[in-house]
Amino acid sequence: MKPRLAAISKTSPRIRETILEINNLRKVFRINGSFLTVLDGIDFGVKSGEMICILGRSGCGKTTLLRMLAGFLAPSSGEILLNGKPVAKPGTDRCVVFQEDTLFPWLTVKENIAFGLRGRTTDRKAFDEEAERFLSLVGLSEFRDYLPREISGGMKQRVALARVLILKPEVLLMDEPFASLDAQTREEMQNLLLSLWENLSHTILFVTHDVTEAVTLADRVLVMSKDPGRIREEIHVDLARPRKWEKSDFLFFSRKLHERLRD
Ligand SMILES: Nc1ncnc2c1ncn2[C@@H]1O[C@H](COP(=O)(O)OP(=O)(O)O)[C@@H](O)[C@H]1O
Ligand SMILES: [Mg+2]
Image (tube, rainbow, N blue to C red):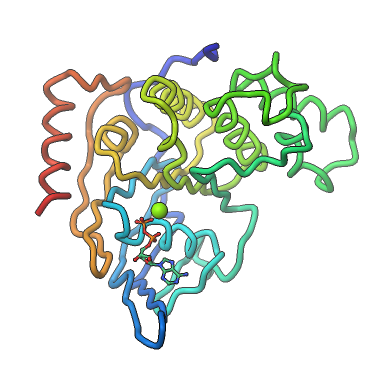
């Protein structure tokens, strides 16, 4: 089943001031008595409303970077500032969607989506309306009473998306969230994400190893290199949306990103 998608506008008019600043970030792990520098000299800013893709090959430190931005992991040095304040721990201003299924198996689709609202409001009606709104936004109203094991992988990722969006995070962090889906479902999810982004004006940092995904989604792609992980280049994808992979300007960016990943 497909959700109804809102029209996707051509540009990203909502981009405003810098909301997130990453300054000279470095992460060193200690493994069996020796030190492994996984990330070094990571420097970038993210503007409010921007859709950024962090593109890099497996093992270059993308997940490590996202975990630090989420506050799950402390940097070895450098700083992360959200609205000028250092990020020291997890918070609902930054939510993460992972590749793997992280739903509560004993809760229904609707209960999973509404879970984070518990304790935020005692108004039962408002609580229910908000849950229904996000169920509908991800096209799952008919599946509200299903359990996670009764729905497909793509639908699970819709639930995962809705249950963080309902918290209205300032920054949405996504770690290869569609990587385990089949090609068609992945494309549907990318369109859904773009539609939600257009409607809800989130700032999104989307990690991927997939060039086509990065060109489809991003305003700006940060290309990472490995050993240690660094941002080697920043590429602005100034293409109108919706973007079609078979178009020549799309292929131009794909080729460019493939080259950057290779050398
Ligand atoms: N907790 C950890 N302890 C030790 N090494 C780690 C830890 N987490 C990640 N690494 C190492 O850091 C490198 C980057 O990992 P990761 O951030 O998962 O990369 P990516 O997400 O780009 O595939 C890998 O070599 C991985 O083995
Ligand atoms: Mg990873």
